[in-house]
Length: 330
Image 1 (cartoon, rainbow, N blue to C red):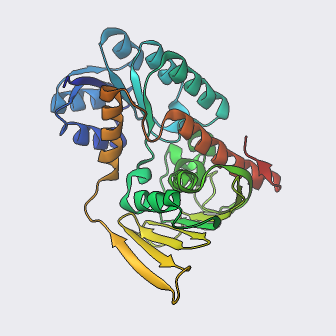
Image 2: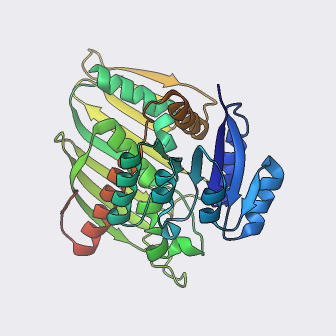
C-alpha cells in the first residue's frame, strides 16, 4: 500500500494533535507544514520531517501532496478547500468548516466537482456510544424516535479570537457544534429551529461578544422534537457532552463517549443494559477513516456536505435567537 503525502494548513494545537496521530500510521508521510507564523511550521517540520512554509498557497504550488489537513480558526478560512480540490488534493477540515453558508457551499461545490475525498473533524461520530446508538436505531430496535435531548456543558473561556462572534461564531457554532452534528447523524436532518441565548456568566469580560448560555428547540424532518442546552459557565475541568434519544421501543442515554445505556421500554418489566468500550480514540478513527477512504476510493463518514448541513443548523439557531422567531433550516 502506497504512502500518502500529507500537508498541513495551520500548525496550532489541533494540527499538533492530528500530526501526532498521523505519525503512527505507516500509510502516511507528513510532507509539509504551513502557517502564517512560520516558526510553528518549522517546529512541526523539525519534529516530523518535511518542509515548512509561511504560505499555504506556496506549499500547494510546490509540493506534490495527496491530502491536506486544514486546521485554521473559523475566521481564517478563505479558498483553501477550493484550491486544494482543484489540484486534486483530498481535504480533511476542522469544524466549523466556515462562518457563512455561502463559503461552505463553495467548498462543497469544489470538492464534489473535482472528485476529491473530504472529511470534517466531527470525531464524536466515531465514539463507541454514538456508533452503538446508530446501529440500534438503524436496526429498528429503538422504534420511531420522538424526543432528542442534549447538553454541552463546560467552564471554558479564551480571551483571544474565540470570544469574538465575528471570528468564532460563538460557542454554539464553534464548540457545541460537535453535539449538534452527532444528533443530526443519529436522528436525521432538522427542518425548523428556535433558540434563546445570552451572556450571563461572563458579562465582565472585555471584548466578549459571544453567548455563554443557549437553549435550542428543534423539529427534525422525521417529526421528532429536539432540545439542546449549551454553556461555558458550568463546572471547572468537567466537559459534559450528554444526550438521550427516546424512541417508541427503547431509550438511549449517554453521558460519556464510551458508555451507552439502553432502556427497553417495549419489554415488561422495563429492562436496562449498559454497553461500554474503553480506550477508543475517536480522533484517530476519524483520521484513519479519511486515509482509508483515499486509499480505497470510498466515501468518508463525514464528507464536507455533512459539515455544511451542521453549519447551516447552528447558524439557523443563532439567527433564531437574534430574531426571536423560528427559523427554517435550509
